[in-house]
Length: 297
Image (cartoon, rainbow, N blue to C red):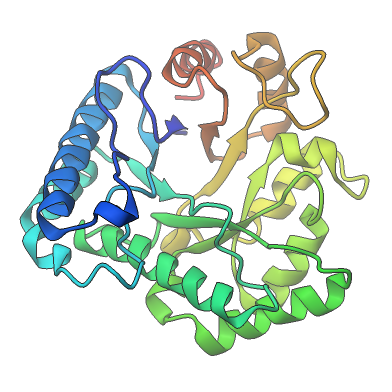
C-alpha cells in the first residue's frame, strides 16, 4: 500500500504550479516558469521518498497554458530530458503518480467547446506522463461532470465522448471518481460498464452520496473495476468531514482514529491512498504511522 497527498508540499519553499497572466504570455516566460515548476517537483519527490510517501498527485499546472491555443511552443521537446529524468526517478523508487484536471474538464458538457477544451487538457496531462515514460498505472482522475437536468442523457454524452473523441493514450489513463453531490458509486459503475473506465473511490464522497452500500462493499465494487496488470491496484481518495462545517467540507488535519477505523473496511484489499486533507504532508506522516502500526506498509 502506498500513501500520499496532492500537489502542494507545505514544508518546502517552492511551488510546482507557478504561473503568470495570459496577457503577459511569451515563450521566454513560459520556459522560465516550467523550469521552476519541474525543479520544485523534483524537490517534492525527493522529500516524499525520504518520508515514505510513495503516492503523489502532480499539479495540473506544471506547464502553464499548455492546453491553451496560445501555447504553440514545443515545450515537450525542450524539456524532454527533464521529464525523462523525473520519470526515471519515479520508476526507480516505485512511486505511484496521478493527476487531477481542474473542474473545467467536463466530458459530458452539452457545450462542444467545453468538451474540446477538456480533451485538450487531458491530452496535455497525459503527455506529461508519457514524456516521463510512466506506464498506464499512472492515472488521470476526473469527475463524471454535470447533470444538466437529465442525468441519463448526461451519462450518455460522457460515454459517447469517451468512445468517439478521446485518444487511446488518454483512455488508457482515465479514471472516474464518485463525487459528493451528483454522481454516486452506482452512477460510476454504470459508466464503467459502458466504457471500462476504472473507478477511483472517494470514501468521503461515498459517505455524502451513496445508494446504501456499506463501506467495505463499496471498496470491493470499486476495486473490481481495476485490472492490476494494466491499471495497478485501486487508487482512492481519503478524507473526512470537517466538524461544524457544511456537509462535504474536508477536514483540516487527519483524525487518526477515524482513519484507523476506515482501514478495517479494507479487509485485506490492496489500495493506494491519496489524503485529501488540508495540511498535506503533516497528516500524511501521521497516517503512515498508523499504517506501520497496522503492518499495512
